[in-house]
Length: 229
Image 1 (cartoon, helix red, strand yellow):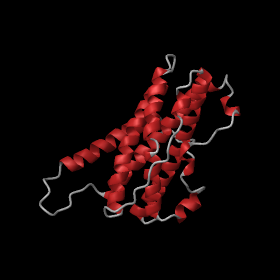
Image 2: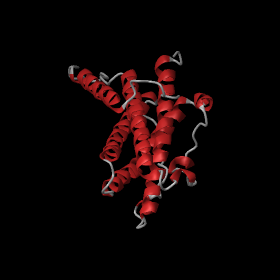
Image 3: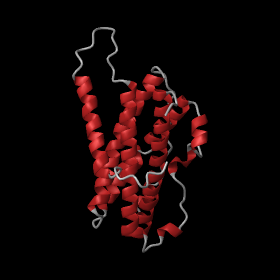
Image 4: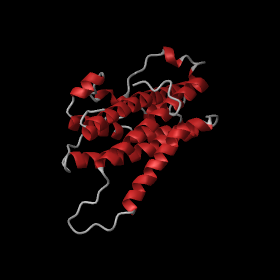
């Protein structure tokens, strides 16, 4: 699912979409009268999916921009792209290799997969923000995107938990996040080692955010529109 060629996928435009979506959801909830006893007054499942898809696309867009800027600022002179990527910490989580495999997964399995991958980024995103902030010459654009992604990832996690509870009627399996062991490399005394660790982390973030974006669009089509989209 390539976003190239679309003119309305830039950060500012998507931020407006996220804000508008958040306001609409809040307005819908705020405009409802207090729920009578025994009546379900939750936000519609379609609205929850709309918000999740907007957030996931926004996160992927930000991570792509951050990777591009980091690569331009630090990686080219050091030839990072010629060095082997050691593997993302989420590589231990089995994920579909292509769209066809994703379509063949049961939607409950795919929902739990999305939640597990998102949860696996909680700790790395916190340290990504901390270590980028420690780079004195780091462009403001890299830091601001890292902060924004950490915040939006938490929001997306909350939204996914609501969706899963609704789809699975409050029953879901708990799977541990994939462990991240990259902190010692981010805190190495050698500058090139630290920068390469950041390069790998942002590279993996871009990869995983693209997967999540695709999975959520597929799930929305399947669950909300009965695959008729």
